[in-house]
Length: 130
Image 1 (spheres, rainbow, N blue to C red):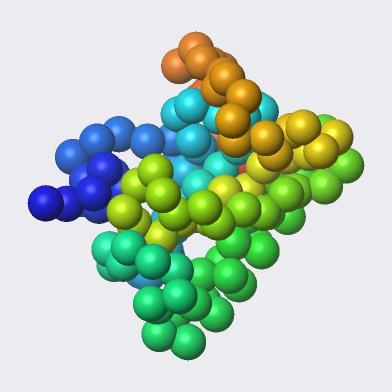
Image 2 (image 1 turned 135 degrees about the vertical axis):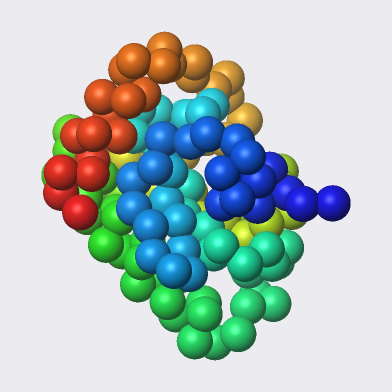
């Protein structure tokens, strides 16, 4: 059964796309920790990040770096936190989280619910720096 991220890649589920290549996709997390929280995934469904081939893993990280720089320019923050948890969706993904304090990366706290129009504005703002 395809993961929710594979369904996003296939266009079966909409997303607020930030950037895309033939191999990778970045989009806003629909239940973010903070505004601008972005997910970066390989388009090929691979459950565990360390099961990726070396070149593919390197490519994912290079793509994430480009996206993180755009997020940092668009969202006022001290830096972009990076996390790979891998338990919630069986598809490799990197969380890019704008941070101003350590608690911004606390995945146990309540997630935000941002209205659709604001999500669109956030995505548009980040995309201008890609």
